[in-house]
Length: 399
Ligand code: NAD
Image (tube, rainbow, N blue to C red; front, side):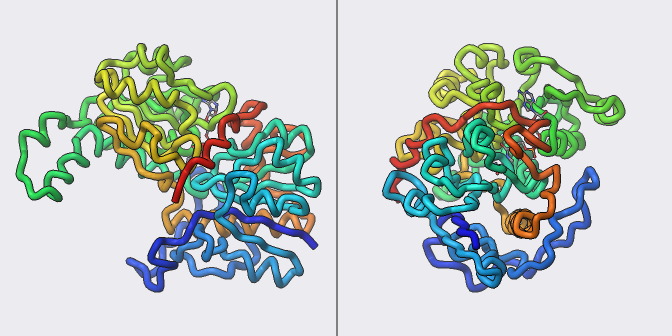
């Protein structure tokens, strides 16, 4: 029987909710490209309840324990005295969400000789040393598509919030003011602006589709070119480099995975190619950007705004400069963990576990690493290597 260690974010400070703002969730039949939603044999949770926090347990306890397995759920993940580290020695499966990632470095893998599989309950497995997993024959899987549309909604919200100067204007209301000139001195319309996505995968393409009705000009770069019919339908301009895209765009949004090729792709040098006053939205991964170069670009006005929800490391220490830099619209990492998304990735995690324990193949589209190499979506969207360096700094966060 297996031991599964599941690292989840803390419960709300007021405790796990007893009631919710809404009753239930809309029913989705399929994802936009036809991929089916998760298909576990059963679920033991109520869709629309908080599943991603420790007490929510991703709805997995009944299923795992009734099959004789041991489930350890904890939020204690950083530092050598963490519960995660303490439990590694006989763990067979580690599960965590990118919002509160269990950084699975090679050192941690070496402390876990029985480890067979690392599951990302969500999308984006860069918190696992993928090279380390390949070298050790550990499977890495994630719940592809579960929150791609959730994130795209957050991107659109962020574009509008930054360009229209929503957050400072809202703050004037809270302060009791009526300071219209202060609010609008940085407020523009998105209509007619050029927006470009770095990567047009599930999220990037959705962002383009959602922004089309705002009459923006649409651009993208990706290592895989979209079908000609899609380029025509959306009137897309393709760029083979970030430099070429950044030079013409008023708004740039990052939607590629973090891997060695994309790490720090936005840095002091590449920011020089951006138009003065460009807006940058990053809901993909914090480490796609050089932390200090972003803060400096906001200070100098090279960037007019920066928003997103991803940081490095996570949780971000209190003195992380993105908390205090000017003209930002940052949130903690939340875009992919709406109650709607949680129901999908909890079901997807259950599906992956059922496949593993019943010796059935895990869907190809959920695989990142298998059999010592990148597989499935991993082979399409990642490059080999490790992007976890520096993650030990997460230990500095104080609750
Ligand atoms: P996806 O696999 O559908 O798309 C990824 C795209 O990136 C692919 O089209 C791929 O070709 C492209 N790509 C990879 N390397 C590239 C490179 N060097 N240059 C240009 N393009 C490159 O994945 P998705 O569902 O669109 O998610 C993308 C990423 O967004 C995830 O890997 C994750 O890091 C992030 N994400 C964040 C959240 C959140 O809550 N903020 C949630 C989900 C995903």
